Amino acid sequence: MFSGNRIPIIAFVLGLILVLVYASIFVVNEREQAIVLRFGEIQDVKTEPGLYFKAPFAFAGFDTVQIIEDRLLRLDLVDSPPVQVSGGRFYEVDAFLTFQITDARRFREQVSGDLNSAAARLRTRFDAALRRVYGLRGFEAALSEERTEMMREVRDLLRPDAQQLGLTIDDVRIVRTDLTAEVSQQTFDRMSAERLAEAERLRARGRENAQRIRAVADRQVVEILSEARRESEILRGEGDAERNRIFAEAFTRDPDFFEFYRSMIAYERAMQDGGTTMVLSPDSEFFQFFQDAEGRPPAPRRAP
Image 1 (tube, rainbow, N blue to C red):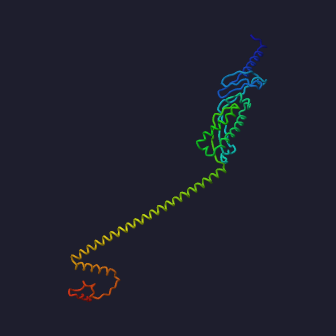
Image 2 (cartoon, rainbow, N blue to C red; image 1 turned 90 degrees about the vertical axis):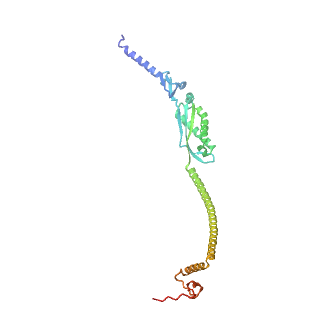
Image 3 (cartoon, rainbow, N blue to C red; image 1 turned 120 degrees about the vertical axis):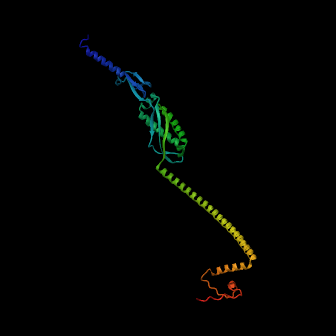
């Protein structure tokens, strides 16, 4: 059995061993990678997840571990100064990129493993690459099929600078390309003027078509009326000829009756207007059918 004065010593030794073991191990998970430093110098880079050992007592300058990201990261470029495109106009552009730390050793050497410092340097290069790509094109390119090619160009321009920082650019995306307030008003005024001019051209074309249609319609009306008058005159002439033929035939059959009929029609037409006054001799030829058989006019009627 241990004597009582040895128990504290054993407990101290066991505690010291536990402290040494705890200070000598570190864990790297799947989303991380670790840089092992000794006196500030890189000793090793752990990229695989697992349990690792290092020299203890980091406070004495021995091994220290710096954990850095090993996942896909995103950097947004928003609210940056307007980008000038070909033609001299300025536009507001928002974009983002995704990147990953693929060279932890270089990342440590260039920016001391500080992700914020790396993002600041990458953002500056990102903005310069966007301005260069947009400067070679007009605004319409970002709204056309060239948009994909523009994003690839920005990515390719960024990759060499990113590799110097130990980073790999995965993708670049343009989120928004908008007109500035000044350019937007100018564009609106230009589009409004173009629409007004187009509307005036359409109205002028409509008036021209209306006049042409109206002239064609007027000509057709004149032609139709002329044709109708011609046909009516032909029909009237044929009717008059038929009437005269019937009259002539009736006259040849019974000249006395025909003369009597013509006289009756003349009497009717003459007497239609009640206000008409005629002064004729009683033995006038007009009243021949009012005379008796001996040619004497009828006796005047006496009042009852």
